[in-house]
Length: 427
Image (tube, rainbow, N blue to C red; front, side, top):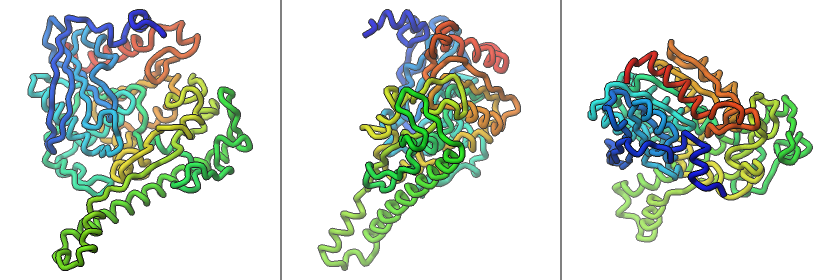
């Protein structure tokens, strides 16, 4: 195992290299629905900048992000905020995440920052695009309902806007990501071993070769495979909505004036069903043919996935997995590619502030055509797509080619700070 100090020397932009003189303030926040979140505000030791870089991921720890050291060294403040759903998206309602972000940005405005750079990394890219798309609208035109049917009153929310939007190694939203990876060969949601072999990407008859050999999938087969992925998402949406409707039915029964007249046993049954939340268990969610066929949307990526580096088939069938256990409302709002309102290709149409999209072309899970789609659909007049060659999702070098270049994280900073300064001026 590599010693931490040695690793830090090899990774000059690791968080462990943060200058000890950088000021740090722990910030505890309460959203308007009373949910709690927290963050850390970093300021350079020798100045009080008016520009702050803002970070949040739906569930990942972002208070110690790798951009903190280089940005503070260049004189910027950075605020890394963790959401109410940190490390657990089982019941994640994306619309409620917007309340956490609004609380964070209100705090920054009250703290005296005049300019806010929204830096969305990975899942933070779609999240901050979702936020900006709502914050930029007239309050009356904001969302009022979650996909699960719960009211979410953004019309009364004070939502400060970002001044710039940057998406780094950003996927298209959890739902769109799920449409790429969900296994359409599942025959029975209650039986994870039931397989339709005709649509199994891990079936040799369909072009599969054992990892790390590259596979090759027929393009007509692939087109139908993608349609069947969408169909499975719709089926899961139906299950989720049925659970929600059943729960609502018994809750209404509990409130009905006739409830008190029911026999005791019937009242008990209604009360229990009204309080019961059913969970969805979703198997086999790592089945994107592009993981194993590098000729699908080619890039400098290696074969495989960041979610199962040893072999994607292990991640598809093994423990854990994306969206493995979800509440119905969490599925519909976050991981459903056919119901979520947080898909970046949709929300970025309403992001009109200057926009920079940075694509790491060695990323196993994010693909060139997706980044081109974001650029095309962006609502900003000032928009740019830049590529970091030979960099993976976490901005580590890919292969021997990547080792010959400057560290990808350093290349990122050299790319985005001039872009920020051209638009916002001094810090």
